[in-house]
Length: 71
Image 1 (spheres, rainbow, N blue to C red):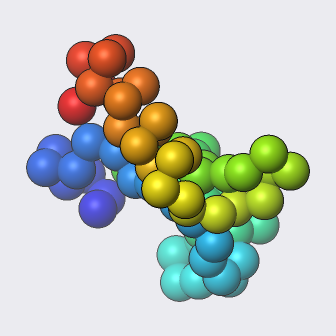
Image 2: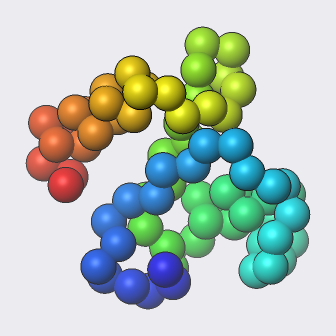
């Protein structure tokens, strides 16, 4: 996804903290969030800030992105 214009946003749910390419960052999510080389990152979270993709938060996130003319 690095420098790939066909990707506009990356939605993250639960994932491994470690991964190839995370460099000095604590997680692959943090690496993508702090780099201009990747598309926008959205953490899919539930009320207790735990990463989890649910039908409702997925729908709400897509609605916000569409309403904001981001996608």
